[in-house]
Image: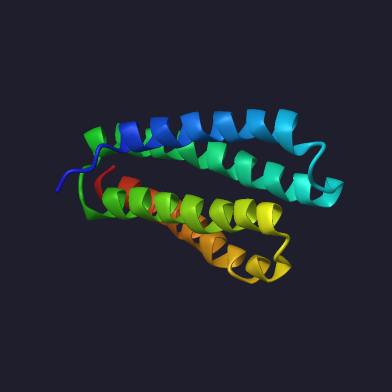
Length: 123
């Protein structure tokens, strides 16, 4: 299965922009300043990793293989777990969700490491 990392990254970027606009305009009056900051952190990391997925798409043309795909999947999983937990925390106020956020952060770290390994193995 070949995953189109450019499409995944572009989709994540589009959602990130939409969520950022929503946060700036609709959430500001509805949630506390600290929860708005939590939401903004989620949007920021989503945008960073949307760009990382676009880099994975480029890297897949140079170093195709399991390490590149692992990187893409880890970035995607990181967006879902890290950013998603922050978004849900913002909307629900359930702060215990912060306990799963580091799992998404670990996915991001491992994604960057997998990308590095891919470039070193075949670069």
